[in-house]
Length: 370
Image 1 (cartoon, rainbow, N blue to C red):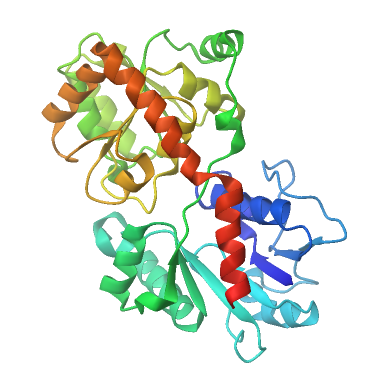
Image 2 (tube, rainbow, N blue to C red):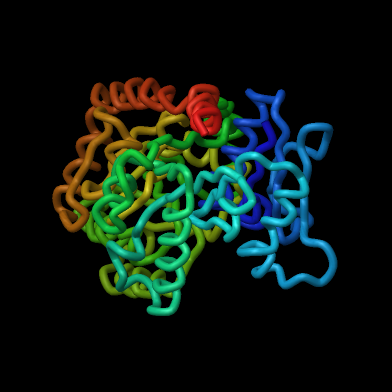
């Protein structure tokens, strides 16, 4: 089978959609090498953390020829290249599909990660929100199958866009295998020294933006005077509000911000943390939770979206505005050794549900059904 992918995010995004795209392409090509894979991208960024299969007899990287407008190529011109290459199935990995696929006789799958821009429109500009809506509606309409990365996303697709339930398949994603490798005490110590991290801390990973709801965690710190928090992720203007609050309430010495730590150091950071806290108001899946569980780090997350799907029954959950309840649960995990050990063991066992080979088999079955 010849399978094509919209690989723009895989080559050009180092987080989020890029991680998902790389994971899926690598997993399917690793476990099903008898197929031929075509990775379509407007360009290949030199020095990026692409970590994708290299070009060989069954893996090809295709970029637009000449001076074609790259956005036009992704939305329309790519179909001509797909037909030229004999692609039988095209998979849009980030809620987009080009036009003309049906006319060209090419089956299609589109992955939808979340509908946050419809659930929480206040976090998006009107123009961006309209563009996302138009692209997603078009993709869901023309796709032969829609791949939702969680049951919550499937629910939103049905509820908000009237996508037929029988057209949607829920297939979870895995995390990078580096998180499953146990770091040595020396490796963890070296990373802590590199970033000036304390020996004991709780961790939050993700873009520092309003939706991720770091605010409730900062408020919880007011009741946890002996707890240090490490926050790593891209910072937006939202971080200024957080820092003002920290200064006003004399909490600066409890919080360390790491603006995009090296990806290679993240497993050691996770494994050094006593607890991972992820109070995001809404996610499509919540991959940092899975990274934490695979790293052997217990998790507290927010209710209200799909985080229970990512964290499983033995993680703890709290309402996203309940800073007092959050502080109590953090204190509970940090002071109850038996509870913490049970969360680590059960959480790691739950993370095995997201085994790459099992998930790749589900994706391949979806292709074969088409």
